[in-house]
Image 1 (cartoon, rainbow, N blue to C red):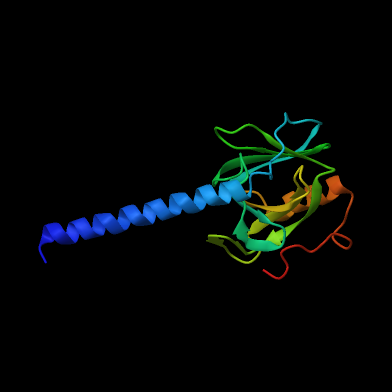
Image 2 (image 1 turned 180 degrees about the horizontal axis):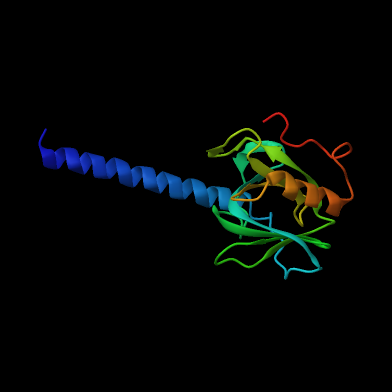
Length: 172
């Protein structure tokens, strides 16, 4: 086989793989079309701020089932602000996603989710409810702050403590 023929075969395989990935992503976007991240201005008095990486949003307790939620579909840097009214996620190029206290279902630590494995309990997991009732798990990886500090702030916001909070992500 000539070098040109081998190159053409490689290019064809790459084009097919890219087409299949695009098809799968569009299919996932249709499937998850009813799940929407709440977009709103940050409200309330700031209690704490953190910076890090937004990793993924999945179905609740299904860390391998990524949701294609508008404004939370792709990995990004994130500024997390906990206020007395909820949690704001500010990502470059996206409007502020504001999870008010009534939406928050739980918080905890995790070691892995779709496409990402870190040191033990290296991710912060926030469970929240979308408008359609779907409970979502959003995973964050803090850069310099202690992840336990963010978990504690969200637990205080929800009015829970370590003893009565759902130990989310404990199995991961």
